[in-house]
Amino acid sequence: TSPGESKIGLTVEGIVNRIARLNEVGFVWDPFGEQWMENYGKLLDFVNEFSSTLVPYRYESDPGLGIWAYGQRRSYKRRTLSK
Image 1 (tube, one colour):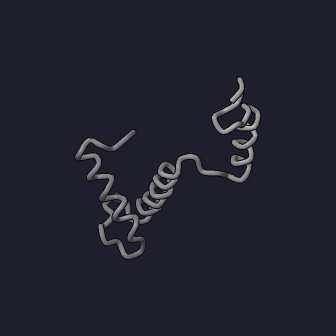
Image 2 (cartoon, one colour):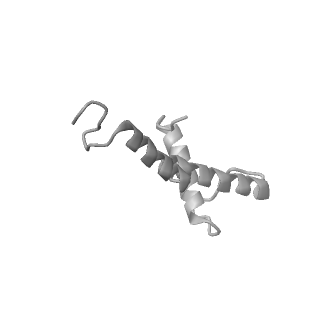
Image 3 (tube, one colour):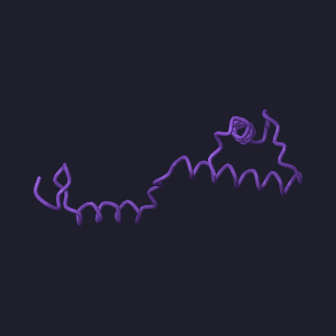
């Protein structure tokens, strides 16, 4: 490689161009963060409807939300919940 090129032969401008193109189509750079925000939004909807954050583990209307809420509590107890 020459100065200014990556290991795969791209220039800085080429890399910036690729990143810009991915951003233009709404590429998700942090899929776990995106998924967390989606579930958090669902939790807010649950709270608005039921005035509670106690989502049942087997919540029939959205089984994934109950599992997610359980996972958040488990991570909190294990001190592995990131901020």
